[in-house]
Image (cartoon, rainbow, N blue to C red; front, side, top):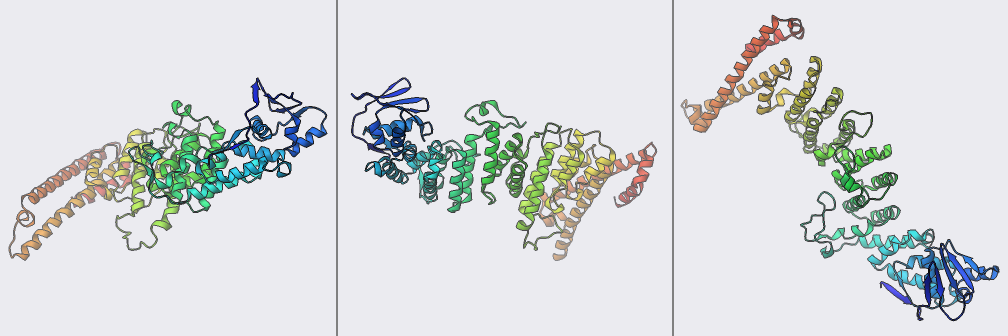
Length: 569
């Protein structure tokens, strides 16, 4: 039921400027002022229906009444006047709340006529609560009727009705949600024929003000709604009221987005971010990491409370393996900082991840080999993400060495199965900071395990003139050991097959024909190139001994290492 008709007479009210005049044959004997609007009426119809108006009219000799605190203002009083004159009008979900509160304020009880306005509006609101659309419309009007709408329990009744219906499982999907634009990072796709059955209620509740929206979220949470559905609703609400899509990489707002539909002041936006942060579900993955990082960037731009930012950082850390690299590039918003990105914030996020991941991910995983390079899936994903982040921020000339080293060394040794990513980040940092001392370059290179470089990375490292000579020789040493072990394996296979057939067949014929022979030739040629590279390095070292660097190389023991390395070669 969307409306109810009250009254039976034709409309006798006419608006003249800022005044409503009753156009009956009798002259007006009382003027009621509500705000800036005046009503020229008659005393008897009013006092016969309202206890409050009866008392005011009889106690005051004046013919002017002031009702400036009436719930709903002049619009509500116009309907009250029509009800008193038995003029026809429609009672709807949009005016029922204010009219119910106005009737309560005017004390329009059954003592002043059967079927008075309080009972009529109360009965209609009971019917409105059976309709989702009507309940939403009624709840939207409750703010204008405060505090009566709260004291009469109308807000609580509306919220309970919405929560109960939102938590009901509805089969199928809703056609009226079809072909909508994406809500947040692809949660709703424009190509989807219809939206999931559980998401039908989001678009209706996000139009509510923050205090009512919070109460709806609390109500559906208490009724057991899935955290993921609550997370989608929070994202929709933030998207509607905050310019989250308008944040540029530099941390400023895109003017077109910021000026379009978001009229909240910065203080109101900061309050909204803090409130949404408190409403985020605790379950991991209930809200996408991209959305939480957007909120974090926005909170930093608006200088939200420390507790809000810390909560968002913890939530990102709890699901860091689900983050994307470009979302992790958080602009530095502090005026005194010179770095482009907030590396210290990412450091805290990684620390939170390590604090939370240990007990959850590796409990009962003793069967995994700690001595090898097999990493748990989540830790491996985070290691790759962190290496990519380090490579992005390494280009910043203002990034301090200690911050880079601390972040790179945060993860345990077993997190990286290969050190190619951290080698790439080190290489970029060295090129962007050519003023580093030898000692600082040595410290930087300790982040990399030369034994965990791929063949491609080892080849690049050998030719990298930015790396210290000691590191280059270490890479050459382990690369040669790997190739010699690889070749030794071929010969072992060849000998085994040869003994099994009582013959000494060639490696090529026993292990796979021409392709294997070609592969073995490639390995031999590669090993030969590495040995030549070693000879060239030893030659350069001998020349350095005769120069001004002889004291430095004697101090670091390069002479002894060179002999040992050369003998093995």
